[in-house]
Image (tube, rainbow, N blue to C red; front, side, top):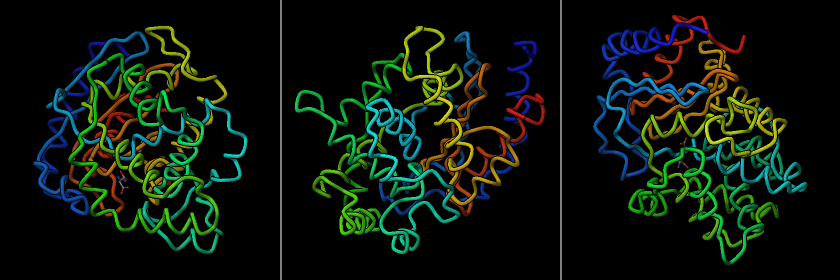
Length: 311
Ligand code: GLU
């Protein structure tokens, strides 16, 4: 493995290069509570398999993890080994925007994968079905996020969740469309409330890179030694992140970066190098596919400069 001191130098170099790109993307404005985020921000964090961290930029500033939460909810769903899940959501790239309704209509209400909005809403529905009154689906999610990041202070921003509940018209349409195809079992409003709440979890890049370490270590947190999922399940999640983690730009991300990763419209991206590290990056200006423009560039620079990728 590369000399550890070089990681900090590489992050510093990336920082200098990417901040010249401020102003080229657009902050997500379809969620009113996120529209006023300061656009010119950048932070990046690496957590190595031994727990050592390297950071650059505003690495202690939290942001809305949005769709990155779909990885945690899918982790929980796999853990509950609900066999019917395979029939409720597929595992193919969508080739469509994250919130598209078109494909869902002609494919009978079965979402292409758990990382587009429709798929994540189905996963939320399934988590509600398998939860108890003592511990609801959202509590389980937060517990998992806190466990994986080894940080009990992580919480969600209620005003972001509320803002999306009031303005999430496409997600409301997706959920209702799937309900009409019998692919949602619970009350649509309950499922959406859960979905918007999980998206509103806030983390900084340090917490985020730390929290994905279990996926770099075959499902076991390499620092706490706790088993989060089986190695076979970790393989499945990483494969899905590689093929479906960036919506209709998943192929482009894989081509440029060469790592499994998941983005969110809040501007975060997290990527995994199995056996080595997890990397989180944040910059809120998005490209036309709804992925962080500078975040993608920073990850491409990282794998290019270090020569480390999964290939
Ligand atoms: N809460 C967002 C939505 O449902 C998540 C999308 C994303 O982060 O890509 O629209």
